[in-house]
Length: 319
Length: 264
Image 1 (cartoon, rainbow over the protein chains, first blue to last red):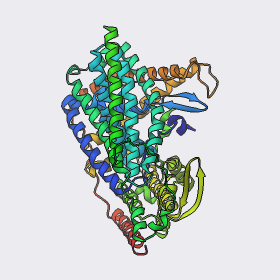
Image 2: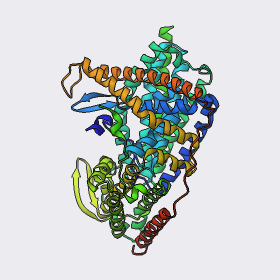
Image 3: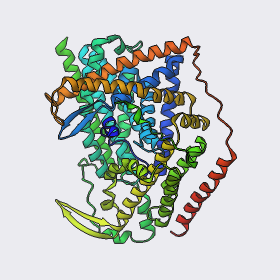
Image 4: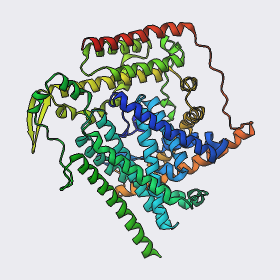
């Protein structure tokens, strides 16, 4: 069937309507509107009247690039999602606009992602993935000082980080909506996307290698020499913000729990053994929410530290 | 094979097709918001909403089978919600030991899960009918009249136009790859890393073709007098007949919400 060839495996990240509560949907819409608004304004400054044709055609490119698939194993196939690639090739603001357009068209034409929850999908795949991907890329590039390997290490890390951060944000939104407990949603979403991220990283590196060989000038846009650290910091801050939100989502009582409390059958629930949330908390920290925040912080910092250490070692050995 | 078959619009002459795009967009969004607002387990409300969705589907002449097939798109995502069955506190209906976890299927959890599935199913139907009965340019015009940023709507219009051009380009790249590769179906040649890299190079090649095309398009637009402003026809006046159709629809939605709250 044509539909399945063209849209091989809808990413498990496009949230359909019904899975997020109205409140969460509206908050995500508000955040997405701010992000897209800033992107519209900044890209207008940079591109002027070229903005509409350039962004329109490149959004169509991302959409078409998602159709390019390759077999992984046992009948499953992998394909590009594109947030980090868009950010690296076009810059963060244009990247946000193209990815937002892609998410909107997927929802409108293919019902791949809902309409009321579109704000959340735009926030995850259009804004968070793009900004975090770009931040990681610029951070590695700053360390690599324009050497060729920086493009590939940075591209891989950016694509992987973008996919994983977007999936974590998605899990948090599901948990806040009372659709899936965080203890389940976070490990499954992040776990699946840690693997999908590897494929995303490989495709992104392949695309960057091709562009670097054919049109190196496109990878070095004007003004890219400065401000790299600022972007890296922004990416890290966003990744940390998403991590910090996670523990807040778990004690949030969903509507049903409140109903249960009101109607007094919360006592009846006491004997329902409910131990699905694994205790991945730091020892020695008494408060559970605090401990989860601390664990998330430590994890993010370790990953960032390892990435920069690898990049630094690489630079010393190549210079 | 061309990608044009992707267009979601299906030409008919039904009442729903003839409704103004703005009215349809607002009504579809209202139906989705209404399902989101319906409390879990308010079954009569869900039945009424389903009857409403089904009625609109029949009136659209798109075919109930077509709508239901397209509505199945969101089903795989149900996996993401299935754990609420066990994690919502309530009266346990069924308990089982899985490894070291005691899992209890609770009544409240089951109600929550079924409600999520119903909300999703109803919302997707609304979206399917909207996009299959409204051509994309009409939908864009509706979004423009609803005060979405003009630039964003213009970009979406361009994207829709060039999805078919660049999508065909991507299909040609894939056909070329298939013609040069002799791997049996479902198995690629070489390692999976190599295959991912080749796919990446195809994406890179597609990017260069796209950006060069966008430059040619921009030049052609300049040659025709483009000055940065995307002009469009003024939207037609809202026909009173469409408001007459919309009013009872909204009243029914409000009534369903009232019913869902009063009896629960």
